[in-house]
Image 1 (cartoon, protein in one colour):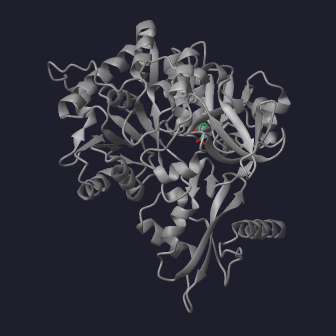
Image 2 (tube, protein in one colour):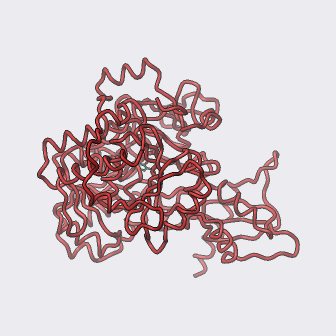
Image 3 (cartoon, protein in one colour):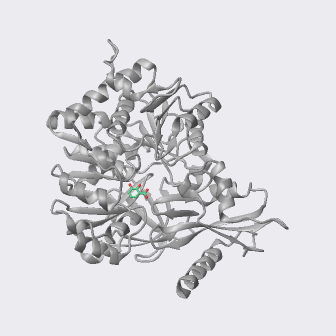
Length: 547
Ligand code: DBH
């Protein structure tokens, strides 16, 4: 196992193999099985470009040969920040093929986050686009490289700057002769890639996922997510995120001989014509996007008869909206309550309306050991509230290189603390809140500590508490409560201009600022955030009431 990662104890590993959960194949071998079976069939569609399984595999092998020639080595980490594209899939599998470990970053991450990933993972490479959504990643990459001595190779998708290696050019150039790719990939029970945690403390933690556990993650999700029988998946959310990547996502589609249609956007104007044109079957979505679709008259103008399943992940979708999805789009609704650390819960497609419309689903695997515990670590009676903890064949036993965090995040017997407050009945789970200090902005997790640590560096700020405020579309948004230094002033615009200079992702910026004279404090002197949340919820309700 890669140094800095925690293995499953031998008796668990034995059991997971014996029960067939761990197939001892790599993600590459999984794909190669599909290439054998479905080689000439379509795998990925982007606009007018259509790739067969064989096209994808040829591109992977070519790029992998270049990566090996350039000197990427088994077990080395590479920060991976490509936006949705066929190249994302090709480059991901090419890295895995040479045994390099991609750290799956997301497009909104900026210097602060990416630099942290590079430093923490001691990454030797970084893959990024030239310009995406108006932001030039090349300058950022140069700065990050200058500050991080481990970082050697900058790979850019699109136009390369000085000293950058063009991924597009590698894909167009015949591979160097005599490169032997066999035996380079990590063994199936070792780390394939690293996902990012929602982050409770400063910045996201790195989640090492093995080939065995990630092959299982996507494979087990295929029938549960309605992706069996070679269905077509519409990828519209970030493909580097666990949800659209592997739950069942694009990896599930590739395993089952399906098709991935990559959407260029999430608006109804883009999505519904595309569902009709490509006869898409399964559409993974999130609350803000779904709300937008439900309020549009565009869906009715299109033939959606191919659509069988629409899923919601990230934050809970209200029951009334779940019913409206089934009525308006003529498909089955599915709630997916998952985590990049492992455990995935799905409402079963054949479950009762009650379960489909109210619950957060049930664990994907019969050997996901889920427990609901009280503050003392004892299991609560069925149906009562408690913290959800889990152990299983695709749930990690530790974050990468984080012994102190692992102490907090895992129980002594290896259960991962999800940080969610839930009820459980007949193995179905209902999420009722969160234990950890995170804001969930339409599925994007904002770590309060991280933003507070930056706000507090503002010269006018004396103290700060970031809390979630309710929002109809996003579920939650960030509201900053601050105490200012005597005689100082600050408005939201000034605060956010200051934060943007600190180069944090835009979704983390506070969307409201409350300047106060004092905070409600606990006996230990900690800010009582629950009181602040109640305060802002009341204020918002009053303001809406007055309109
Ligand atoms: O929120 C998540 O992290 C998430 C949601 C749905 C996830 O990781 C997943 C499905 O796989």
